[in-house]
Length: 175
Image (cartoon, rainbow, N blue to C red; front, side):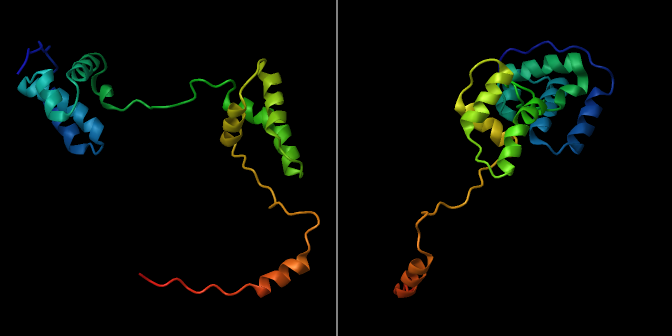
């Protein structure tokens, strides 16, 4: 089975508390974390056996044991993932910087990414990629709304007459 790790003494009632938590938890990953501690304390299973049974790596199990010794039940909660780790500006600063450009766009002007880029570069103090500009625009819920392009010399009457002369499409046979 593998080498057994020495377990420390836990307060009386730890096993019962873990069993109560197991009954009330619905989240699968949180349940596995509780089970790994429960199997270790109650049955003395090794990290290898627990990892194989619960689908965890033995090192992850041992790290969880360490966290349980330090933090107690707080180690069962999932840590939030994601976030803005590499942003040039805070979300509010981005919105303020783009406010002028977006106001012009709402007024009927075309929002050009290079103009927005220059505005952001002035605020940040160095050059940025155009892809970054588009990501910032996307985060600020900007979307490109433009009329469908139409030729300036288009003849509406000729187009309507042409549509009337088109043969009607026959329905596709069912297979």
